[in-house]
Length: 189
Image 1 (cartoon, rainbow, N blue to C red):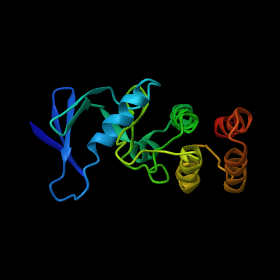
Image 2 (image 1 turned 120 degrees about the vertical axis):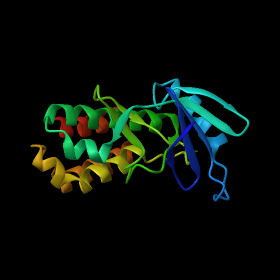
Image 3 (image 1 turned 180 degrees about the vertical axis):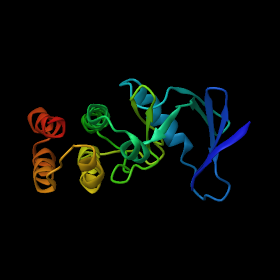
C-alpha cells in the first residue's frame, strides 16, 4: 500500500479504488470513529465518498479521483462548469444544514472538496463533523466563495460581496428554501 496523503489527524493509504485512513501517530486525537459515523449518515443523502467499513481503528472508503476545489477554480475555464460545481457544494451544504450536521471546515475547504473529471463535487474528511442545532455549512461556504471573488471574476462570474453577505445573513436567520433559492439564483446568474 502506498501513502497517499498525510494530515494532522490521519494518514491515508491507497489500495486500488479504496482509501484506508488510519490515525496519525503524532495526533493525540482519534477522529476516525466520528468520521465513519458521519460518512455513513451522509452517504444516505449521496454526500461524501462511499463508506466501506470501519474496522480495527481503520476507515475504509472509496477513493475519489479528483482535484482540490481551489485548483479546479483556478484551472477551469468554463463558467457553466464552475457554477455547476458551486451549486453542487451549496446543495450538499444545505442538505447537511437540514440534517443538523455541521462539517466545520467549509470556510477554507482547500482539501475537503474534490472535483472529479465529470465535474462532480465530492466532500471528504468528515472527522470534525458535529451535530448542531444551528449548522453553518451554507454560510461557511459562502465565505469561501466571497474570498475567491477575484478568481471567479476571471472566469466571468461576478460576485457582489455585499449582496452575497446579505443573502447569507438572510439564510442564517430564516434557514428556509426561499432564502436558499435566492443564493442559488445569485450564484447562477
